[in-house]
Length: 148
Image (cartoon, one colour):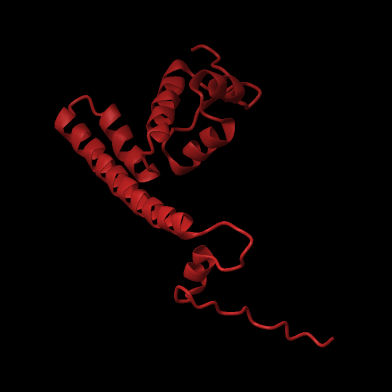
């Protein structure tokens, strides 16, 4: 058996930070690595390949729960591509919902920015919206209650 590589080298080769590698080991996404005579972690080519797999999936926004399913499918040579596609499709649907939510937020904020004059006057529809003040009526902030 070859000695393997240290965690820093595994991190460099896989693009996954050493801290994340330790976390993946802790939660069971990555099996415990072999240990060298010095008791340091020693990662093999299969470990680095799994780390690359995990890193790519995380960069696409898959959750830890999704990663567990993907790793199980990756390791299952009898898997069907239908199962992989279903998991990826569910993730895509979550992304689409998040995009729709962000577009809605963007639209609401764009209207507030458009309606704010941005001049020397203190009235501002952005502040009014955030404070719950009706448009055109400005509510004064609470007075400072400290003794003078």
